Length: 239
Image (cartoon, rainbow, N blue to C red; front, side):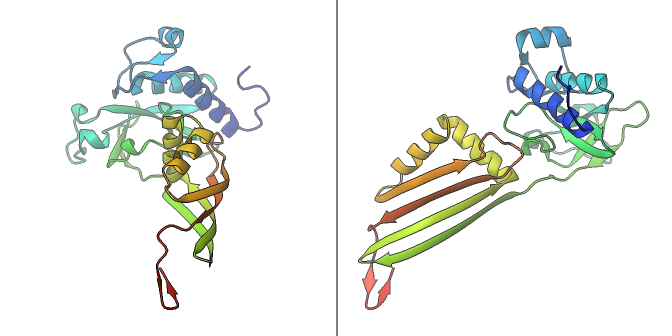
């Protein structure tokens, strides 16, 4: 079964989250509602809205004895919620709030490239609202990840040629954005080919991209390069 041999509750939750992402394709419509039952949704392997996909996620989590509730929000393109007088029509999106091993995790299974615990950037606007019989409180939630990118270049210059090595690390949303760019082109090999073909005058070797499919890990990229383009000498200075 899906949860067989899962050693921790966190691993169980992650398997359910990954299963929903794999089985259900999001058509791109934002909504806090689900207009169909789970059977119809899974038969079509498609969620017509964020509400349909994430309510299916909540249902499976509850069936596995997790405390999971719906949370509604207003996406960035929908405008901000007014905390002093929030109304239902200000909210246009639904996600899941899950308690896993005493830790609160917000989940959105609409995006196949995001690991559990990271929400699409569109979700971070100002406040969320819990849909809970005992509480409908507003919650201010900040992003759990950063858009962080680190690059280190080792460069040597000789005989009017530049030789170098690049090591890059992409964290969290930077890694997510790189994965999106790769997916648009095809796979890592297609991305490398496109990158190199659009870098005029530079020769690349040993170009690698790592951890593309390991969503919970940072992505790494490395390559060596050489070029003789755009080198300007002025006395003993090289530009």
